[in-house]
Amino acid sequence: MKNLLLVSLDKEYVINILGTLTEEISEDYQIEVITDSDYLESYVQTPHKVDTLLIDESLLDVYPNNQSIGHKYLITETDKIGANVISKYSGVPGIMKILGADYMRRSKRIDAGKTRIHDVISVNDPKIKTIAAITIAKHLSAYGRKVLYISADNLQDFNVYMKDNESFAGEEEALSIKAVIKGITGKLDGLVKNDDFDYIPQFEHLLSSYGMTSGAMLCIAEEIQKFDIYDDIIIDHPFGFSVDTVTRLENSKSIVIISDQSEDAIRKIEKLLDNTKEVTENSTLVCYPYENESSNIFSSDKTFCGLNICETREKIDIKDNSNIIEELVEMKAFRDTAEAIL
Image (cartoon, rainbow, N blue to C red; front, side, top):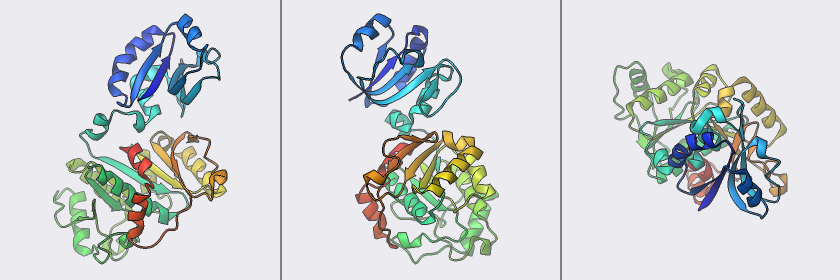
């Protein structure tokens, strides 16, 4: 079992959060607390291994560097927050938001009672974005989740990764989507297919050929969310950042950003985050590709521009067939990402 050490001399603060924190934190963590200065001084005289440390920033000088710490988070007296900064005023919700989904109790992750939408985007590689979205859907379905995959691309090209790659959506499916969006009917019969997870089939022609836009696919996802028949909906966003995509991201509670490690990709991520604050708070970052460990610029960091780096992976030889998804699942690619967004 991992340990989470909370170090604060503010006993009132600790008393106020400890009960709720115990209920919210993952079963994999045992909470330890230090609130006495004399005990803290004695404790740090000998080395200890701490998986996760939450410590008042005023005590940093007291806590020496000879201690083995997996992850360190600072508790501040101000209302500022950051990737590794927790405001006292945010309480347990603030702590859990900064720690992320990996620290959440599994029963609370799985039994949320509401359909969750996960938005998958890429700053510079549309192909890996689609493959990532489908592989994440596969992993989630393997965990017993009821999953729906939706492509919002105007020109869709994901059939090649499906077992049934000769079935296409057309005018009838477009009419069904329009009806659901308008609230005329909530029936999804005949609209979705299944490949371990449900998905709206690839449209044979451009969405615009049916009088639809990418925005319509985002709307259908939000309408289906209201039915509460799925645990998770994966939206594979169009490449680029249209007004519809940016609006969706600003209201999203779960965003997966796929990126390589090129300079232009890093600049684009920084620009995206500068313009959409909410994206930083609800995103996880997946970094592709790097040739070897020495070329992995994110290898020593867990965050980038406030984003949690969920996983980094070496370059993968992407093939245009459904077997590539099975291969990625077998090699556990994107599994950490799927677990992080649960």
